[in-house]
Image (cartoon, rainbow, N blue to C red):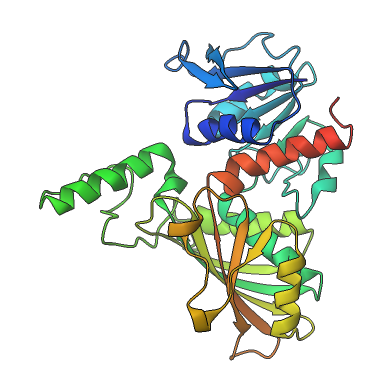
Length: 336
């Protein structure tokens, strides 16, 4: 088994290294690829020094079974043929292929069987906010079909990559020293602020990030569910939070929902308001699971439930989800 990481120098690429080692992924060799700027750098993996190769057209992927790619949509599209032409399975973390009809969009806790139909040898990793949400929605969907979802996201700086985290850290120091904050990565100062704007605005005045949640959820869940999202950037370093309201065909009790979340794969319930216990990103960054709390009835809708989720955007929202897909491919014998 030979695995490649494309875009290893980025925040997700670095997390790929850690997750593969931590989960002891069954492989014989790991190959690292990056841009011309990253080529030649060395990274340690399980005690070995690995040198980054420049990603370029050719036959470098000829003997590679799985490529974990996180180098941006433009790079993924440009190198699709180079990566897959000899049979490599490309698990892509960008938005390049997510809505292509011939590319499965997969969250292993929700629709792993979709991996079995990949005519282009590509499997797309969904958007981080979508991954977090659908893991939770799957638990409710088992009880009754979800017809409608309203969601407000509270997305950390890590959603904008390493540069986003660096800017929040720099702004925090600058504001503390009464200096004008550096604003480059985000539309406005993020420290001491929230910004209701992630990605570009579309003709319907929703952002691209918000429409990803609508379109991707329906594809992953093979559902006609209606999703309305407001995506907000908050001054948190890492891990996204989401406030979710769902409407179901049949009324679901809070107790039934609670049990469903507790029994669901990939979910940890933290829900005891009387003792002030609920998920928070401060304490859950670096954790693999989706954490669910504040589970209650929607008092405006008898068929409604509302709850709160927190998950590490770089882990379950990106690198971990991709590695779990790779694990499924190996387990099912799709990749040998």
